Image (cartoon, rainbow, N blue to C red; front, side, top):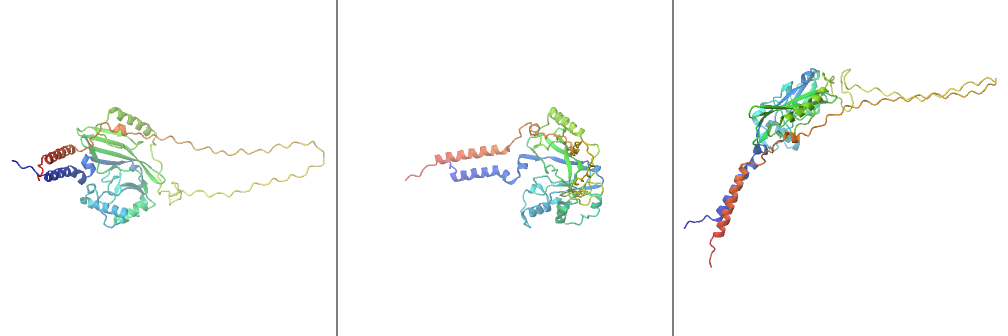
Length: 368
């Protein structure tokens, strides 16, 4: 008679199979579990229209040093625990912590969601930049300079994620974002996502014109339909037609709380004119007594009332282009939501559980 495996062994085998099916989810980040890394490129444009300013990207790369520095900033721990190691690499530690950038591709950047501080675009008047030596600064000194120095302009634009992942099964292979600097305002750099170009596995490319819209909340799972590309191109053309050919003059230094920080004459940020003292209205001078010759009384003409000075209200700005909800336009096909290995593992685990139940049911009972 063949010996049957003990129930304990079957239960142990079932537990081991269940652990193997979930090991991938516990040991790998969600992006790698449900997708694959794309080629991501970020390109800047419009910076050459501001020759009197120097532009920086800080921080430049999510190195292990930057990840530890971020952990120290967030926790105060000098030796913080590092997570999501897939987002940085120690081989990048020879990269600088900041870049001086111009029109063209950004060598490296940090998107939101990484274990490092997200990258930000900064600008500084060129004559001021000539007095600042960033090369010998430590990482802590660089961070203090870029986050606290009042002479810097800062952009609120958020770079795309890095690394960037697509869903399994998608033919998407590369994403190129064109970031355009429109102007330097009194206190910030105004930048928009001008367009995004998608490249698919067959080599075809599609460019989605944005500028006045937000970044799509998700990547397209497959190529977009031509009518959707045309829709955004038409919106973009109307927005572009309202943009000035030349940007307004850029201030030399930002304005902080309405105070002048040292802007040169003729730039934004001059001191307001002092308030003039308000004089009391002049009292009426009493007229001399009339001659005793009788004369018919003449009704005094009413004193002319000065018309109130009406300051016309400033013209209402042109209504901003409404932000497009592109979520439905971008997601044209439901991406696979689960790992294809999980159903197989679940089936194996279920089969082993059934074998264990049968084995326990057929096990001969001890007779007394």
